[in-house]
Every structure is written in structure tokens, then in C-alpha cells.
Image (cartoon, rainbow, N blue to C red; front, top):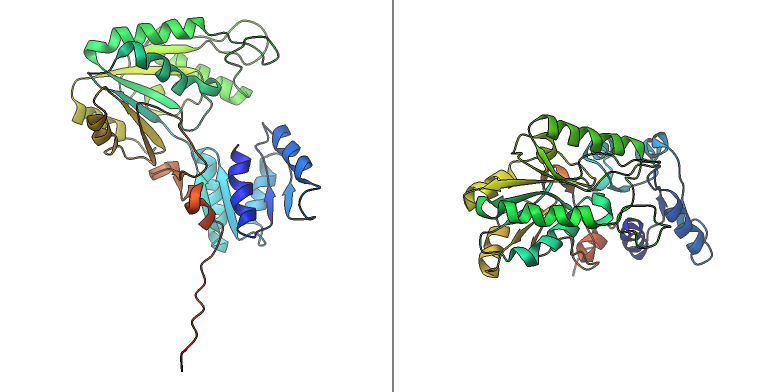
Length: 321
């Protein structure tokens, strides 16, 4: 999907391109290149795979005039630094620490499952997935219980097994990071309402984890976990919780959940992020611009805005005289 977000507008705007997938996930993107090899003229779409030094060589090479990158904030900063000496144009779609704010008028029974899958889709390995949930104190226990019940009920396993709903964490470094953040949360006074540890057996499988008893300042609340662990944090005042949700370097997306849609929309408009959803999350569309504020990115992908990002405007002015 991420490859298509770049291939389609880049080629439609008339460019040739070199596409490099993450070294942890090369096979699907290489297959796309194989499928398109006989569709496009030679040299128009080139797909190469390799470890991190390959990406660094590509971004600093004098031939490319435009770099579109999706990945972590840390790597995005390196891409921007490599592009700067040559003043290459960049689009950076980086990490997020997306807040979901649950309002006091919400229907808990309706919202819990949506919150769960907004956080745990692809096992939490989505840049714009819910990373932290803010709930009113009066609704805390019911929401935590509902999320924990779902976390305990979903089937985790290899994608080759029947009825599996969640798979593994993609790679060892990320598996170790999620494990570290959950351990830190539990050592800091947090409680695992569900999960809380790696699963037994082979592979990078981690129990779907719901954490409570935490607040802003905890690493797993302040940082992007990018895995199957979700902290639930309480609040008392709506203005205060919006301020807390915005008190971060991240600004990719967020969501507000409530029965009064107009009220929820007004609150969502105060979130400092590229996409603010109301009563949903991860609702993406190819015609809808997608980008982040602050450290979550530069520029946007998709829609007319994303297409224009792969072009340079030129004015040709002829005198009437």
C-alpha cells in the first residue's frame, strides 16, 4: 500500500523512479516490481532492496531530485539531512503517537471494539494507529475491561494458521523495543489489564496488552510503541486533555469519540495533527491528503496534493507586445 502511494503519483506526474522497501519487508515490494516489469517501459520503475547503507546512498546521490520517505522520525531526520546539501525536494511521512480522546457521553459498548482495532490493526504496526487512549475517570473501568476482554479473546499466531487475527511483531529490534516499553510501564507502577509479556514459543509474538495506571510522562504514553500494547489514561477536563494530547513532538493523526458528533468535531479540530477523525480511526482514502504536523512529517501524500508533490511548477510568460 505504501509503495502504491508513491508509485502512482510519481509516474502519473511523468517521473522515473527508484523504489526501495524497508530491509525488513522487501518481498511484497519486489513482487510489485516484478508484476510491473513488462507493463512499463524499461527504466521507468526500478525496485531495489538492501540494507540501510543503500538508502543512504540513494538519498545523497546527485541524480534524484525528489525523495518520498515513509518510516521513523529518526530515519526521516537522516533523510532530510542527506537531502539538504543538494536541496532535494522531500516528502516525509514519519511516526505518530496518535491520541484517541473518549468523551463522557460515549456509548461504551459501541466504541470499545472500534478503539481496539484502531489500535491493534496489523498488530499495532501502523504509523497512524491509536497509540494512547484518554478516557474520563467515570468510564475508565468499563473501557479498560472491554479492551482487555478483546485482547484476551483475539487469536494470535502465524498468518498460515486458520482464523488468526493478529500476527507477530515484524522484526527483532521492534520486538525488543515493545518488550522494553511494556516492562518499563509495569516497573513504573502500570498494571497489565491484559497481556503484558512475550508469548511462549518461536517467533516475535507478544501478548495483546492493555495497560492502565499510567499517566503522561510514562515512556509508553509519550513515545511511539508501534506494537501490540495500548495505554489507557484518565482525564477530568476536556480542555486539559486536548492540551495533553497535543503536548508531544508528534502530530500525525488522532481521534475523538462521542455521541454528540458536533461537539466531538469541534474538539477534534483542536488536535495538532494532519488527520483528526471523529468516531472512527484509520479511515484512509487515496483521494484524501495524508501527512503529519511537527515531527510526524513534511508534505502530504495522496489526492491532488500528493500528485503535485511530484512536480515542479513552471511559469512561461509571453509578452503581448
